[in-house]
Length: 183
Image (cartoon, rainbow, N blue to C red; front, top):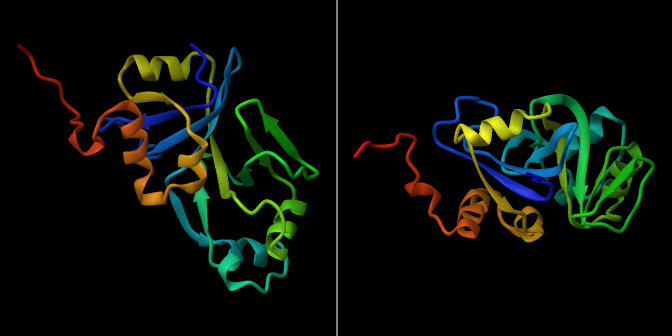
């Protein structure tokens, strides 16, 4: 099983509060484990907060007011910018799935100037699983999986992302229950 470029949709019985009601985009999955970012949780901070902490000037209110996402419970102080491929920065990793992840100061400076990338998610932290851990969670029905659609990541409103992934699976996420019955 390789879940690179897949969505993970948490099930109602998810006990881990870090992932309750979450959609995770898996960037990499292989023999060393899995790495991804939550794409539907905001932190309650804006890019202006990040710019202020890093002494980066931004005069555009629309950019400054953008929400910073919570990418996951791992390394929550580390900033990441998920964006379509194209611009490269000091620390940019391009994934075969058609997304890039940058994590250096120069991308934040570019965002503050209104430069590239124009489409992105600013995140703090990421999600990670040890080898075999994600497979065990899926086997215990903690997650539904679906091939990813970059349109959901970058162009679907935050509040609609869970339902959009459910639609990829042909389900209404509001109808999923956390218990199973017995016949």
